Image (cartoon, rainbow, N blue to C red; front, side, top):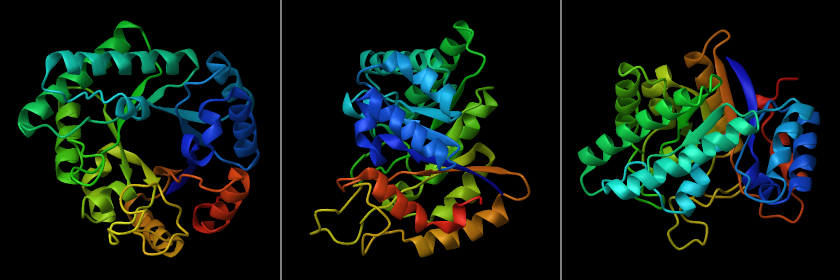
Length: 291
């Protein structure tokens, strides 16, 4: 397995979402640390400077259109056609912005769980097809679309969550000639009540990108219960550095040889200094270091 180190920077370095100077400092720091990729959304100042910063630092990148989709409550699976079209328009704008900044890969989500699951999946399929058609019409040759499943019942309440539904949808898109990829998330799978490695076995034909994320799904009275993007140092959570280390050993039996696996660290920094926090988190995960 060839590990590609990635960081979800809008969470680990929150200021980098709004301030271009913070974005540059973050990118330069992670590049110097040997990271390969950053995953982010930026809606602050200096958005036109993102491309040059990525070029200067040599970082690969993924544009997380999931963030504005959730915040604006726009759903690609919306059974209401006006709502679905509004969601498609949002994602088209994110694709354009990503392309402007030299970012080929865009991350999407399904949108909220629909009362009629079958009709919601049909609407989602139409939306994905329209996004690929849009990229083709714009002659975006360096373009990839990856979908992140979430949970269906805890907090995100997304239509695509269970791995069987996820894998079936990705397969259906591939059969239509649409090269949809998957980004599987360790926390969302735990929230769904499913085993992460089993989920990866089922989705492997479409997935070489995962998120190391954490959640508390056992203590309902805790302020951190649910999908709060906790660090791996929190007690009574689904994932610890030790269990992630075991997961990496399992992954090496599934992704063999030079099979690439992009591992994105998706943790919200709740401390004053995100750089000190990242240093501590990174030190606790030696099994994904490449040096």
